[in-house]
Length: 115
Image 1 (spheres, rainbow, N blue to C red):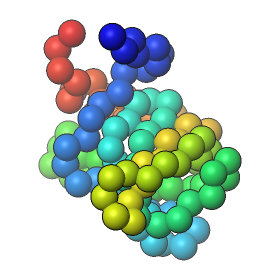
Image 2 (image 1 turned 135 degrees about the vertical axis):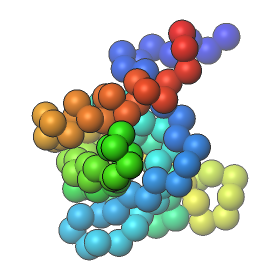
Image 3 (image 1 turned 60 degrees about the vertical axis):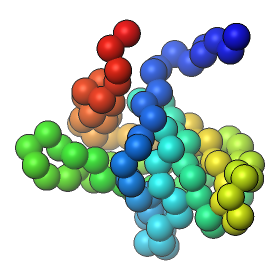
């Protein structure tokens, strides 16, 4: 049995949420799962492990619009998936605006299955 020891619950993200590198504007992947402290991306671009990135993605704002989330992250690990030219990439959030963090927390909580 595998026990999840993470402090913050992770939300599996079934919809397509594109993630962009703020420095280049290029889409680097899509959300696989997310918590208030980090995220897993499915990516098809080469990323540098132990590097810092400024990323951006949009989530529903609860009023029919989109909220841009800008986050500074640390790439903790990266490993290939079974699909050609794709990798899993695990990030830890370093910087996230307080208001955006609260919106992200609500977005996650609204989508988590009941305990």
